[in-house]
Image 1 (cartoon, rainbow over the protein chains, first blue to last red):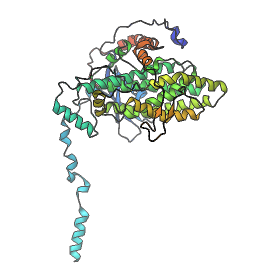
Image 2 (cartoon, chains in turn yellow, blue):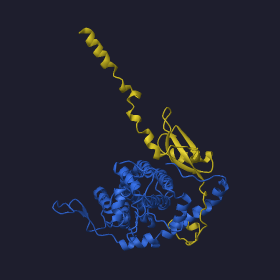
Image 3 (tube, each protein chain N blue to C red):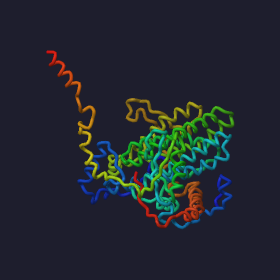
Image 4 (cartoon, rainbow over the protein chains, first blue to last red):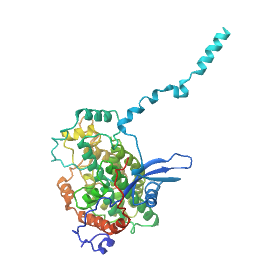
Length: 123
Length: 334
């Protein structure tokens, strides 16, 4: 029997060498992805996962895990198996996006044209 | 709370890169060299995956097992406020284990497999938790100095290359800053208290000093293996460098309280002409004891694992009752 400095452990009468059957797959259930919103008006942010047998318990665990400290307004959970993703392998499909200046306000030099027009008109 | 991954120095490193696709390997290394992170579904060398799983898993186990010696002090903590704080700290440590198990899972080892390897003694965890916490002062020294050591390791590893591990560590480091302050506050209370309190904290420090010096692991054998792991940003600093950083930050704080460190050779080498100038000299820790304890023969190894098995066994019927046989396991995303 384990004799511990902690009387609560000694009281449990645990054999030192006792073995237990190994955990089987899914013993710890499936995973849910958790999304945390700090305050109203903010985006929900992905913060990690929890293992849970159903959505209600996933929310409980997510509350403990990701809302235990700091500020929280709201939490979402979604089964990992229900999330669909792009592949990092295909990341190159986004490569030219930052080059498309015509999609940005800074891509339009209106004042340059106006100033040029005014200058020529008054010349 | 965790020191550094224990890698068996006798492990043969020769076949690390055998059979790896040279083009993919070059792309992988270039990505890391550019400072980009590796994400779960990216191609990665076998050895990278293996070492990361081992390291993150050991880290996760350390959080769980580390909560055991601390948890036993919750009911005996002096005063309501300290009970609340210690309970919060222990809860955080268990939460950190969950974050770390999740990060390791993304690499393809399930949480059930990791738990099985822990309770059969196959996986290691931080050696310090195989020592007992005799008094309240021991719990205070753990909260201050072991957490301090863990933070040094975790801050370094948070700059590593594997995305999920870095994200978990960022969160952990933020949360642990309170643990460190809480521990320091407790030690200061004892060190500035009555002669009995001072004596108690000094004795606890004397007991914990050898495990603290063991905490970061033996000197790294500078091998090919270490070199590759550092290039891949799996290992971010050598064990000796982390130990030096710890001594530099905390020995002055210990001395400041009028406490002594039980090592007559401990001093900072201030000689700028000496190649170890600016570094700390200390008595080489007893690495035979370290090996003996990490391989199972420490004062508390049997108790820690037995308690962990008991928890697993007694919770099993609840987990089984809630198990959904139709669900299929998928790897967590990130």
